[in-house]
Image (cartoon, rainbow, N blue to C red; front, side):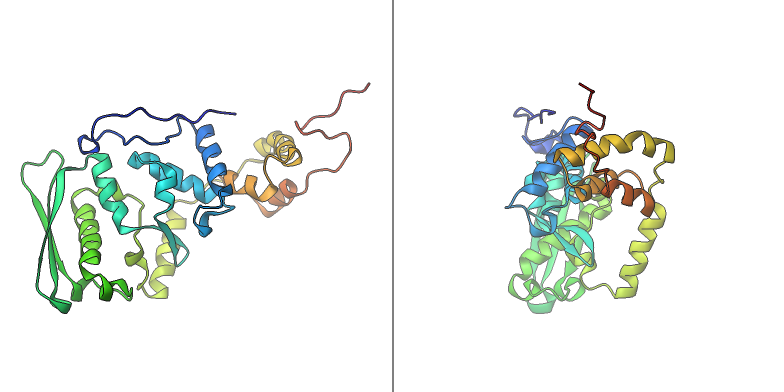
Length: 266
């Protein structure tokens, strides 16, 4: 089994160095970590039994320099899309060193006129940058806007600041408030657009025939179920229905061994 490396304690995250985190050093390490996470009983329900989805968390956590288990606990699924909680946005900014020092928040007004001013200095910039917003302009159907408006203003204001002045930190990342109140048609268009732009290539028949016995061996050995293996494989390529059927139905011949080969005759 591949070892999973733990980075040593380094400089403070505000310098752009990684946090002390469980970070995979190779794709094999990442796959192993994703598999372990998917089997954990304390992982969020939407990730249990889904190593492919867990791999997405592992990869995003690695970009942020954070440990995948902590990031996973702050995720949710909204309209079929994986979302990251607002508090993770600020953590990602600090972990990546995208902002010098800390963001500052100034509040004013009450009720729907409650407002926040978010100020921070992007890394490498010579001046502070600011975004402002109010409850009236930013609130969604989330009940927390009524219960904890200041916290919601902080989360939304931080995301707004990051989208504008540190977009590299949120590349491909959505927060729940960006999706929860969007009309269904808008959601469908957004998802379709993403599929069109990032469609994976079909797995070639020659490579499929070459690797199929190895995959059958993994299934027969009990290391992974067919669906678990397919979830991991589909993060890199698309498969035809015929190919998926073949993966799910390994031969039952007695001479087929766990390593995908045939037993030596005595």
